[in-house]
Length: 69
Image (cartoon, rainbow, N blue to C red; front, side, top):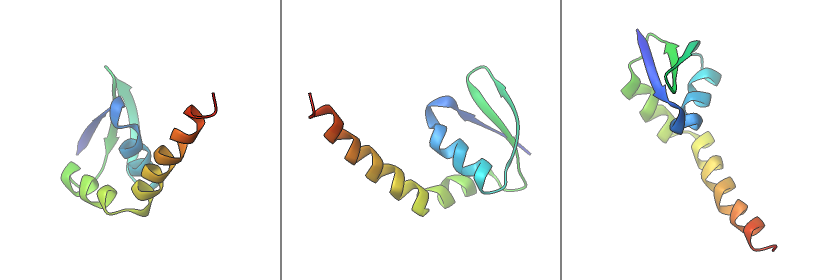
């Protein structure tokens, strides 16, 4: 099945690609993947992943860069 992930959800798209979904195209602001898993399964796996936790921590740490002015 094809799954479209909007570009604003870049982290989810990167997670899917790294975890085995096949990236097939980029159309109209969305990444298009082929996968046997439904999109909801990908979202659940991503939300429970260490990758998302690291990304959130990275975002938190980036706030220190704004304070270096």
